[in-house]
Every structure is written in structure tokens, then in C-alpha cells.
Image (cartoon, rainbow, N blue to C red; front, side, top):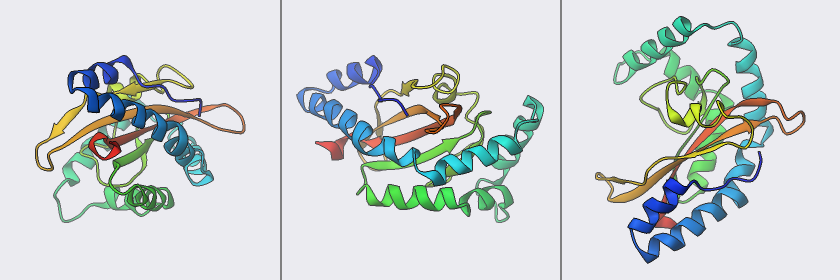
Length: 191
């Protein structure tokens, strides 16, 4: 993955929060460049992306929407075959381990494939398809090295300020664009 840069949206959001936020911006950039980028270069992530891309090579939009609808129907249900299968994957176990090792700095992490469907994740997402969202369109849709940063938001249940930073993922060996990743970052823990 190419060096990650913060978007101006994050910078302006942090500026609006004051001087401590400027330190947080620098800390987010440091964490992304020095730690999180290495997470997605791991063979567990790259191999999972390659496998799912091969399996999803013939999907059309109607197939993708159907899979997303099935995922959404499983939210809160007792039977969750799609969600359970994704959470049981080695990549999800790896992402859970990495999130836990972040001491709360990373609130969530999920990887999506070339069509925007989740490959692995540290916790359940509300939807399976990211392809209709900026986190996919502004990363995978823009090519290798592309980054998208959400607005900083207050999580009212925890009182924490969170930002989602997404980036395209390329195969380290070939440079082929494989998918993307989204990190939920608790900027308050970076100060």
C-alpha cells in the first residue's frame, strides 16, 4: 500500500475541534503510516482478497444487492449463515486480533473486495456491500494509493470522537488493485 495521507476533510474537522485535535491529526497520520498500513500487507489479507475476488469475478450488481439484502436480514436474527461464515474466516480472526492489540485506538476494521463486499472484519457491519459508499468509491474506485476520510463524529454511546479512514489495497507483489480497507479510529486515544 502506498503511503497514506489524511484528507483535508479530516484536517478541517480536527481544526474545528481545537489545538488538541491538531495533535490528533498528526497522531492519526503516524498510526496509519507506521502501523495500520502493515496490517493489510499481511499475507492473510492479501490471500483472502485474491480468493474472494476470484469467487466474485462473475457477480453482477443484482447478485451483489441480493447478498447485501441477505446480510441485512441477518442483523439481529438468530440464524446468520452469511455473517457467521465471514466472521469465521482467518482474515476476520486476524483483524480481530489486530484491533484488540490497538488498545482501543482502532474501533473497527474491515476489508472489502473488488466489488465492495466484505472479505473480513473485526466486528459485524450493518451491511455487506460497501460498493455504494464513499469508502469504496473514493478508494478502490480511484485506484492504488487512494484514501478517503470520513467526517469526525461523536459516538454518543461512548463519548469518543471517531473517524473512518479507508484506503485502496494493492497486491504488494504485483501492484494489482485488490480491494480496500476501512479503519475506525478513536482520535481521542491518540492524544
